[in-house]
Image (cartoon, rainbow, N blue to C red; front, side):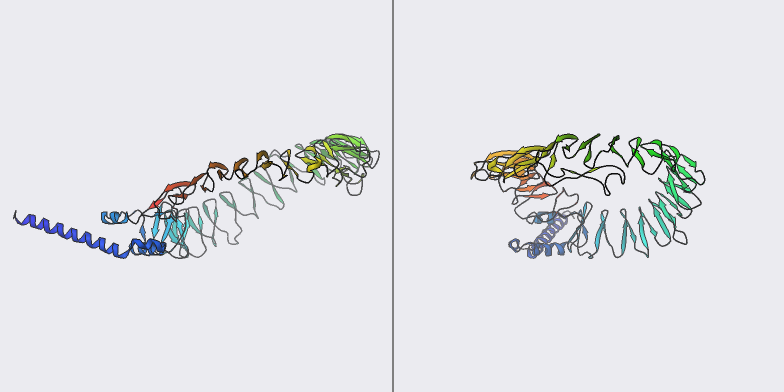
Length: 462
């Protein structure tokens, strides 16, 4: 017996060796390393033979692991992408042939023609079936409010009030609270519903009963008679006639007075306009940024004003501003000549006669695009830079910063050393030895990568 046992062990070892050799030969015959030159097609066919609807985390045998070290290729699988070979869902990769409508549902995948995904839970599709949180409901006979399912009324009239259901013909939803009110023309007063023909809301959530046969309005929490009073910035004022209107907290007669930002002035002519609280003669002065500026001596026509339709005395009794093509305000200064002046963010500049037509604004500064000068200027997001342009210095912007294209590269508004760099987020990387996945860089061999997997910062190699 002791003599037979070593022979049996020896025979078993020989059989194991033959099996390993047979597996290696089978894999080697199915794949030729020279086929790398033919691109991805042969590799994908090989993987399709070896994997069919197998989850990515299935462990390979020791022999397969040893053989596949020669065929390692970094694979980056974009989240929720389908193909006839791979599907990446959550943190799992599925391989095989998938339906055209295959989509991820959590870490699993479904055929959307047959299944419904409700917050990561899979259900078979039924008639009028929809998701309500992690559950399904029949939209023909039920209603989903928030994540709660309610039975729909026979006339399908129910609506949602946050996580509750209600009948809008009998109730009203006010800030998530349902109030049962009988009547028409309903409105909300805080969290309470009311009928506007009978009650008034004082603005603090308080309801008061309206007097009969009276037109009322709420003025700073007080109910007033609209026919005899008016509300001027929260202050109740008498309404003697239709020409009396509000000016701040007071009133004025719009037939012969003007209101300038709460200050009442007597109107003396059709060229009078408001400048803040002051009334000025527009033939003599201009109003720029609230500052009264004398007009040029030989100026003609309106600077920047016009009266409302119908003239002063009709409508609200205010005078409105508009801008003329000849004069306009630049901050608190008056721009009078568009040929020799330039306004940059409310700063007025008188242009150099030699650069009238190549001067531009950079924020509140002025600069020239004169290409004949050795000293060049460039504007990067309202920041002005001056540099000497030559064959070794080609100025460009990287966000709000300046950089030299011949010596530097710009990656996501970050300057890095070296020209013509491939960017991965705000860093550079080498296409031959690295792969970029969602802004992160991973090393790989000389075989190019082609897919990313979720989470996108991970890379799967098999």
